[in-house]
Image 1 (tube, rainbow, N blue to C red):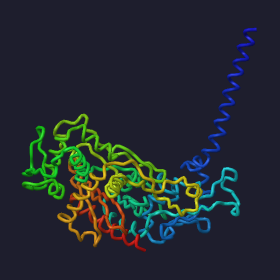
Image 2 (image 1 turned 180 degrees about the vertical axis):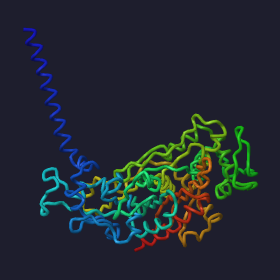
Image 3 (image 1 turned 180 degrees about the horizontal axis):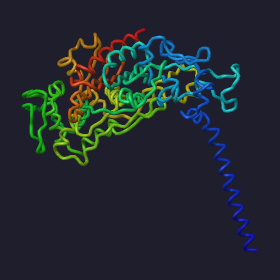
Image 4 (image 1 turned 120 degrees about the horizontal axis):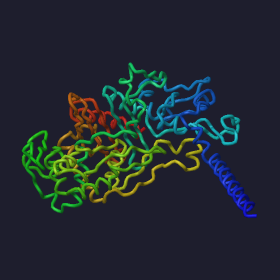
Length: 467
């Protein structure tokens, strides 16, 4: 009798497990089918049954970026536009996992759980997709970036969240994806990576925005203080150097002149706890979603740093790392009084089921980063830098607040691998744009490299908003 009872219980448990497994499989099949279809290893959707029947992808002005014609997937006629938007749109190889054609293939192809890829056209939901980017601005940024080893340029509307420009270098023509071999792999290293979303760089002096924010919130007399910069100072048993001997400066002059000595001393005075706290508030070590794609986390951690390393961290060196999209969002937060708007790239005008059901993130506010008073003070520092150091006419009549930086990544004989930056935002009511541009592959300072990329791209982006 006991044996029969044990066997009955065993059969019951097995049956229960089988039933539970079947329920789980059904739920996963119904809810996750489109995700399975989107996987890069699915040869059906990327081959004859896939992108050749995908809908059009257009920019904000209706410029066709990709479409299916006579059984082929074709891309924009302009090579500059094709290359500049490769990492946003993608190509037939599907190697760029963050691109629209990889992330949203089921929507583009009109995939249905019932019909699969063979839904009758009369039943199909609209499968065209409009992006928020402006093709002309992206091409302009690409032309300014293309001669560097690596880099990125992103511009977004800090009022609405629309990404106007997103360009990553290295790139290639989607009409002819490269065959990467051992002989040419150095040439194409990192080519499938969207640097706007998925890379980090050494920030250099743009990180002084973080240090300045911490000082504004924690040092009551920050605006009345002065410091003396002699070009070099021993802090914690090691030298902190500056590009020049700036003499006696206040906080505005130190920010505009990008004085390493002042911001190194501020980092030490503030200490590990306050510096880490401000980096956390600004999201340096965090990630956020851009139309479903997670940005790469930056890095700021001085828990194990000695005094000299803490000093260097305040000027954007030591182990500091930031992501371009992340820095544009921080600039957007400063422009918006401390609370940024989440960026997105799939327009609400798209005919895809994703946007019609309201599942795409379009312009939602993120968590408040800093107080409105701190944001206003940072804006004043960034505006001072433009007027007194970069030149108010740099952006062609736009009222811009900005900061440049040169992240030193020099190792051995690699004297041309600095990370040059310019980040900022425009305060004009008809041009609410925040930007971040970075280049790697030059021994020059950020103003001469990334600054020129930002200058060209912002001028074109302003035109786009006024069309």
